[in-house]
Image (cartoon, rainbow, N blue to C red):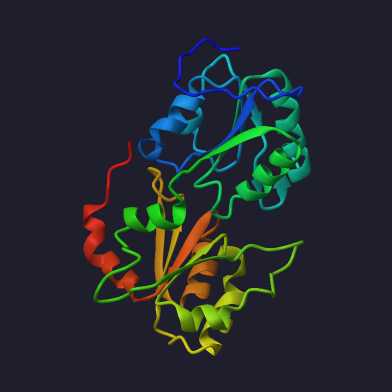
Length: 267
């Protein structure tokens, strides 16, 4: 076990489990947005099982002596299946005191952290969540897009646009989302914009509703594509704008042209 000091109590249960699993949110990419508690855990962890979207600068915080395992999932490529990841966490908790499950953004915001925590609890493993800053908040901020503004928006909806079992998910009620929120933030939706946009238009959103796509949010190579519901699909095709990216839909996107000049610097 690593000897780094950290004021975190490792719970020993009356089972075969020696250690504790920490579900740590790595934030969106900028290492300056990593929480102090999350960073401290990386510096004393015995094992770190990390996702694909965790930035290299965050991975560099891990104790060099720790065992590092890539469990990343990207469209078309799975390093480990979800069941395999959970099984691995349980196995590592049997022999190591501090096991970190490092997830991009926040574990409980489209990160399957709730599923993993439930499985670990059911297996008798001690577990704790360390929240992180989710990309749906941080990336727009770095692009000069406030999700709420007294003159533009008083409501926000976060929704996943990701595929399920290889096809577009038909169970998301895009009509209700369009009618119920002034700002819509879509995670993992770039690949499905051609299916999502017509539903939002059918629900009553105007064709000139502003849209922003943000790729690699808060990183030095952050990219933005600004358009409208009428133009954004064609713009994506023409520029070959690709994942990982989030979409922001609503009039707050108009502030990008004013506020983006004051974007934060990346650590």
